[in-house]
Image 1 (cartoon, rainbow over the protein chains, first blue to last red):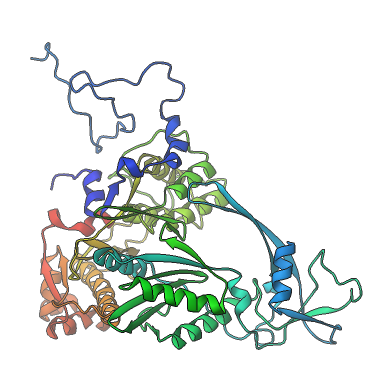
Image 2: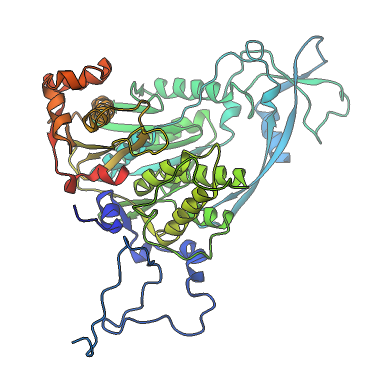
Length: 74
Length: 471
């Protein structure tokens, strides 16, 4: 059986992300430290131009970023 | 402190008497607390006089104890119903709740520090009313409150004694009691207001308005339902464990990570481990995704190793990542019950006991879940699954009874989904006798339920097994 992503587990158990309008300063108390100590802007995915998710780890069973296909790869 | 002392005197909590001979004298002390709002801002400073309950002697100063604590499944159920019918949910706070209880035993207490009567410094307080800290205080408060609710026409639920139901004049009202915190919901806003006014004539009841923050759980309304979240609690937990600057991660535990009693060196701060894991257990109130991992790390509370602490830190990092999540309760549900049960057979390397888990949905709302190690070792996967089915079936029966009391009997028998064909067969036929004759008789009550069409057990593939996440 293929492994399922933990996000799917959360969804099945009705654990959902709060809508952005319901988020407040409570989360900011810990989440502002996310890029602490970095002078530059957070890294951006070259293809999608979205900010890379720093929350993702290198554990093999976890979700990986969408692969970036460059011209050289083609 | 002056306010609290005045309230106690006004309430006739005690009278000063000369020190009786051979009487057990209970001490007292002041407790100070900062009450905070949901966003962490200071609401007020509070002082409370508490009796030193540990000075009481059982059988002399008190006999029975009980505290009205609602089951978390009842809260989820009632909120689901209220959200579905778009009923208002109001939150009440009873100020100095325990002081309302009448005391039937002779209890003597020292005069409070700072408020010793100048003329009678050697007198003691003979308590007439209950006081915080007394062992019998919650019981006498609940007795007083339930008597009042009964007089208003409510009936006490048999399935959960902290739930009261009123069905009168085509309106239905539910009251949930968690010691001195009360939720009230129902079909008629005017009846709810009348009940609140009636309660206010007897108790100092504060109407906190629409449900927003109850038992440390934030309720956030949205157009299609409600989110229950404990994000402030998570922030506090991260700060307490000094993990607020940790790197977040997307899952609470690596899938191939095995924890045992022996692999690792003893963790030096056992209190910290117990405190953090205990807090995580409370977090599981709104986070079924944590049920399995918290169960795993809870097993080592008595003797944690550094590997166990690593696992706890991983959960904390996951909490940081998922701080902005909540348990979603949708407003579009029917009242059909469905349960998913699963087990991991002999997965524990230390004692080879299995973990049984279930999750129960009412419509599409998750209303109850559990992840527990089975008390005995099972000889086969089928047996472990069959035991998990029995546990889920017991919870389903409880749900049916509470729904009946709420006037919402489901039209169809609940369906219990299991991903083990052998266990599914066992629920309807006494097959595999040679391999199942050792299974305890009580587990076979599932068969009676299936035979009486009170329950339907069906097979589901492991791919679609929702309880798989809990094992």
